[in-house]
Image (cartoon, rainbow, N blue to C red; front, side, top):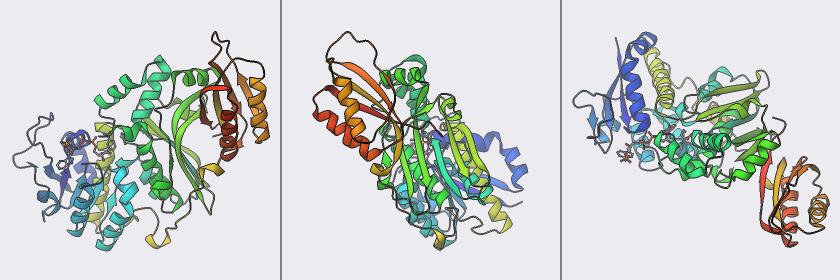
Length: 435
Ligand code: NDP
Ligand code: HSE
């Protein structure tokens, strides 16, 4: 029986999960694959640390060349993370004829075009299922099972760390910092966790999903990105009172001649399925013209779930190799010459509902002035909460608006700021009442 040899770059959280999956399910994988797949080499700068798995002599090495330039290796699995040197190693491995599997969303979202062009020239595969949604098979669903559909939108809770933190803050009223530490201890967070909490990791993922769904390149710098670090306990309390949950939502929409790609905290009605996605779980809601709205749900981060996605790609490439298939599925789901460059709609042009929390001074006419400014800018108020307060200089007024244009909301808030009736910056959270 033929043996496919795999080389792993990175023996950290996900790398260790991949080794565990290889070892524990070797027999099952062999039965499904009809060939042998062997983890021949693992590279990490630390070859001494005990990672709780046994390896044969000679498998672990600190020399990257043992994988990327090793003529015996068929598939290189990149789990170093980050832009460099991961990119250079992948490009060298491609030049050496290796197929690539990576979980590196940052690299694929920002430098994917260069990597894919190199792979297409060389006739090798690049697969990155683990880069989005942990163990959820969303990329293969878009590229294969649902590929007869035109997709109009893709919405997702795509960062396990943020969803874990927001869930804990909602359930227990807990503070942000200790929950982030727990997510890091559980292996969910990025090496630099600001990528998680400031929404960058989610933006990498929705950029990739939008490109795959809508057949376009996505300029990552144009993706509006706002994280959860400014979410205050009081906003979670008001959201709960009004029947909403706050989630870090990734939004991709297709208008034919332009797309929306954005990431920000979003209030969604408690009764919606996405509102029930808690903890490290992720979910993606994809709408195709034939399949209709479709929800995929599962563990969005962590050693084992992510390893499952990596292994799925390893097995897919191995199957292609043993059957002689070459580039059976285009790397981005569309033939390379069919990929467009659709512009991303400016944030000022988007339409949304808004939660606005003003912190005002307690004097006659304040509410009328706020309502007047909003009305002047075509913003209609849907509901209002003004709890009784025992201080005169920081009274919260919470307004929920009907659908409004972001540019109008920004203009109204600037005008209200100039009225000298607020004592703290106004908090704005976008609301999606009609998913
Ligand atoms: P880790 O930091 O746990 O593992 C990376 C490992 O690679 C570390 O041991 C690191 O060593 C080593 N390494 C990095 N660069 C080099 C280098 N140049 N030479 C030798 N060794 C190197 O990261 P994760 O396993 O969590 O993540 C890996 C990738 O998977 C990232 O792209 C991440 O975004 C992605 N991912 C992670 C998920 C998760 O749940 N953790 C989920 C989905 C995707 P050192 O620690 O010394 O730097
Ligand atoms: N840091 C990421 C998260 C890992 O928390 O979702 C999974 O991509």
